Image (cartoon, rainbow, N blue to C red; front, side, top):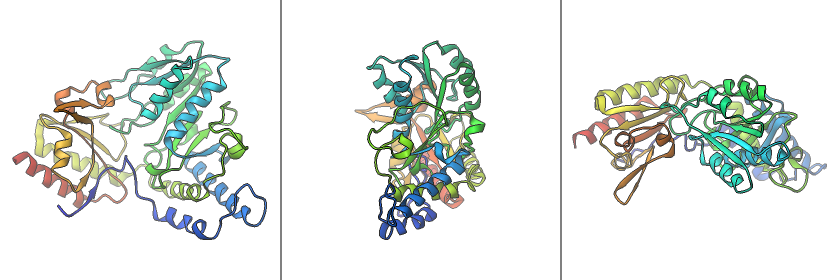
Length: 374
């Protein structure tokens, strides 16, 4: 197959043309340090602050509440470690879930070596945590609750506003990893009720290596990088002007794409096509309704996801299982959802983007139909 079809937008996105254009002047002309108060530095500073304002516009917050980071992993690490270190006099307990990204799970495990106590809550078969479980897990020592907004593998959207209300009632800081949801569904921080929210640039049509952390005003958080007083004293280091500008432009464009109705329509049509081909041998992973509009994670019973994709080398998609020496291991997310191994070993995630067409999806369906005949 000569044609290349990209259906892995949850892994990474192309850079939006508007973001590319926004970066151009800072590749050649505006080279000053944004901390310098002279003719060379001021354009850079203005550009960083404009980008910060554009990110804030997408999140519905004040620009002063946006901290630029190197990406979603740093944002999660900053939120989790920063709150823990800033509140050690209050407690050492953190609540999270079994379906979080490694950039949340691993910092929590690291903090356990420093005395943290971490409660990892289960999820239902759709991948959703029960807010009542969160409430029951709270102790007088709880300093942070961290629950992702939408799952990167199956797209399930967590009940963030409900959990936020519980956290607020208990006086506990609440963080959500919104790497997958920003630009796809509404992420207004006031509507969500969160204190901290992570953004990953390469999931929202900005370059890799840039992200942001929303920090609600008044939230005590330890700086992630210590040094000079950049980013309002919350992250030292000369700002990445080029990528901050790009993230701002990408977030500005994303405001018109929130909801992704075209992707939702194509996804559902594609799902219907898979059911026509595989019948009862194809099942859905994730919540049937409360799911990202671009995400379709399916199990193809009796098959191995990696083998299916290997027969379609021109199609970029992801699997939910790993093959090791003839055995298949489910991803931690699918295992946490209690997906039967016989089904989950055939898991494939298709994630659509702004440029996805029905012609592409039709071609994938044709290829998959041929695979079933062989």
